[in-house]
Length: 178
Picture 1 (spheres, rainbow, N blue to C red):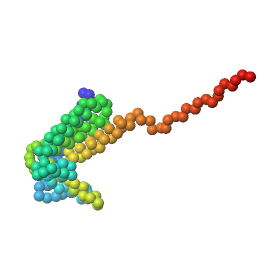
Picture 2 (picture 1 turned 90 degrees about the vertical axis):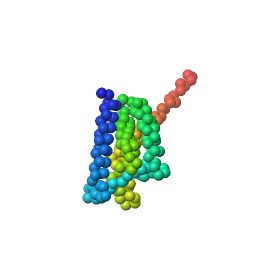
Picture 3 (picture 1 turned 60 degrees about the vertical axis):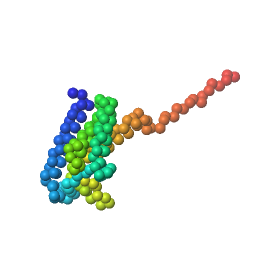
Picture 4 (picture 1 turned 135 degrees about the horizontal axis):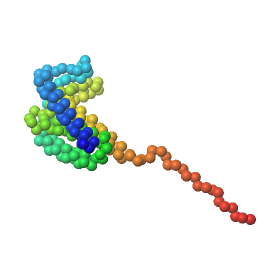
């Protein structure tokens, strides 16, 4: 199996299974109550997000906006995946994470009108409460950051960071014979 397909083939099912299992757990264990992890550092609160990241919504039932947008994004990501070099592990891993997370949340949007199941958070950052999220959201976020790094590295690959060498020209000119 080609390394490109191996990375995707391991990442995609791992994220999807983890996302589905944790969402099912949240639906049963957190219905009507909250809990916490790590001594209260990470609250566990069941929530249904009908919008996009951070609850951004477009109208009352924005899922019918986000379903086609997600499908278009998946098509663009598949084109990036096909164009990625066989051993561009950072690019392949980042695309695999984003695709996995997008599909995980897409399943929730399609299967019911309640929204995407979120359950981690809100996390108190003192200056701001970080919104409630899920495993798919973590995959999308980490993958997007890694994809940006991958593009940045590609753009700067071969860029010489050292200043150009100064070539001294010889000032020795033949003197006229006397």
